[in-house]
Structures are given as structure tokens and as C-alpha cells.
Length: 435
Image (tube, rainbow, N blue to C red):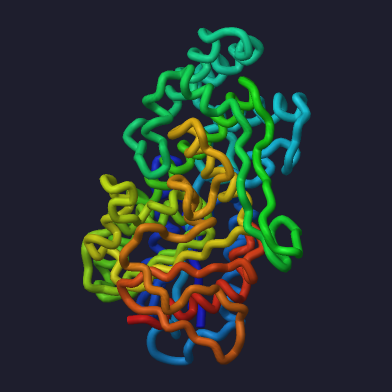
């Protein structure tokens, strides 16, 4: 049974907003077998976040927690943090193969205005004067982008000034994003960004005859490039904030929980950018023999994030989670071609890193997304469970501690936000059972 839940708000800097929320959580852990931590990602207000949590917990109750033993009495910590919306319509004007210049111009301005927003808490309004100045300088360059290299350079430099260079990594081409000459960056973002989506009966592209379909950002030109640069900067901002909240705020609260209850099993579960948040949390928690599991639900970070030497040289940004056994329970990763938001967003990184990227986004793309392809180049991957199955009363997953399970969810997750259904809940239930 779910013994209760506590919502804990964190600021953009990873600070606890209300200490009484933490006190209620810690006081409620006395008679529990497990602590389930939930982190939203793409939601941009409290109502969306809490609806996601309420629905997932209802689904978890419906699939049936054990009556005794591991996973039978579960306390829930529900993280609220100031994320931004991460959806297909923010990546492709019109939500498809749009070609209207006006649609692109409007999307470019919206992307820049999103960068200007810097709320302290989820759902709040807030701008920072420094950010506002940088964004206004970028906006001032828009009309000259087609004809002026100086305007393109100024645009890139002001966008970069919004970003923390310490969060750059080779696994998502963010290092190149910060280092490339501005003119080169514009050149690589100027062309179309098609994405190859394998399809079959009921496939993502609505093609029932099998084969493949193309969907992507099919606009071209300097203003299309400027929009992609702004979108990548929004992604970079969110990955930075997710890391900060995870490493500082959530890990701090869970460290206090472990001080009171050293053997308490903790299960970190994150959706979209929340997947990055909980993975960052795992890297910051003090080593412990107590069980720690990780569930990444359509995670919005690189499919090489957990990888070992994914390009022959570099480990993923969170390789230490596995290499140092910081997560000692099972890791599950849901992934599907139906997640067009992740499927379209991550090929942008390939445009940064190379000139000749064509149809991108699948597991062969060095810069694909976790929610599209699962964890790649990860030696701990276990092939014994490879599907996120429809919920049934008799099915139980055979998850094992210390292993990574990529769960293909083409038949059970319909889009980026569909992570609170009973199929997902059944997998989470069986993660809770592992000791």
C-alpha cells in the first residue's frame, strides 16, 4: 500500500523551499518498507505535475503492491521543481512539417522569451535582469541574421552567455555548442533536421504498412537555425537545472532520510528531464549498502548518458552511477519511437557535431535520446526483459539488482507524456520488490 505522499518544492538553485515539507516526509518514514521518489520533467505548472503523480500512484495501486515484504508499505516523495515544457510543438512550428515563415518567426520569438523566463519555483513567473538583457540583445539581431555574419555572431554569443559551461559534455554535443565558431554553428543548424521513424501496425507515424516515415524540423535558413539554437539553449538550461536540483536539493533530503533510516530502500523515478534529475541525485548520494534503484521514464537526456566509452574515448555524463555502484538495484529505461519530442530534439545535437547528418534519432545516431532508444553502449544491460508489457494480473518482471533493462514501449506508451499508465506502474511495482 501507499502509506502517504509528501510534495517537496525546490528552487531553481536546488534549495528546499519549505523545510516543513521535509520534516513531514522524514517523520512519516518510520513504518515503511520503501521510499519512492518521483520527479516530473516537462510539466510547467503544479497542476500538471500533481496530475501526473496522482495518476501514476493510482495506477500503482491498481496493479497491486505486495501485501507484505519488500514494496508493501511505500512512502512517496513527490519533487516539484521549476522545469519548462518539453513538447513537440516547441520543437517544430505547427507540430509537423511546417513551411510557413511566419510560423518559424513566431516560434523563434517564443523560444527566446522562454529563455528569458527564470522562475524561482515551479509555476511561478520570474525574470532575471541579466538574462533579460542577453535575450533582448539576441532578439535585436533577428532581422539581420540572413545577411550579416556580425548579427549571427552576436546572436550566438548572447545565447551562450545564458549557459553554465560546467554542464557541457561530449554525450550530447553541448561541448561543441559552446566551443564552435558562431558562423559554423549557424551553418550546421541551417538545414532541415529530418528524423527517421520506423513504423509498423499502429506505428508512430500512422503508417500501417510498415517501412519508415520521416518527421522533423523541415524548415531551413538563418532564422530556422536561430530557433534551433534557442531550443538547444532551453534544453541546456533544463539539463543544468535538473542536475542542480538533483545533486543539491533531492540528494540532500534523501541523505537526511538515510541518516535516520540507514537501510531504507530508495527508488528514484524520473520522467523526461526528471530522469536526468534523479540520475544526478544518484551520483550525489553517499555510497550505501541500502538498495537504490533507478527508473527512467521517457528520459530527456543522451542515450549515452550511462555509457562506457561510447565513442571509444568518453564515458557518459552519468557513467559513475553504474561504474561506482551508486545505483545497486535495477535500472529500468522506457523507450519508444512514439516519443516524438525526444526523437526530434536529440538529432539537433548531431547537427552541431557534424555537417552531413541525414535521417537521425535512432540508436545509430551518436546523439540520440534515452527516451527514444534506451541506454546505449552500457555493458550492464540485461536482455532478459526487453519490453514494457501491457499490465496483466499474472505477469511479473524478472528485474535484477545492478542490471539495466531497456523496456521497449511502442505498444504501451503513446507519446512523451504517457508515463502514468498501468503498464508503467507494473514495471515500477516489480522494481520495488527487488532486494
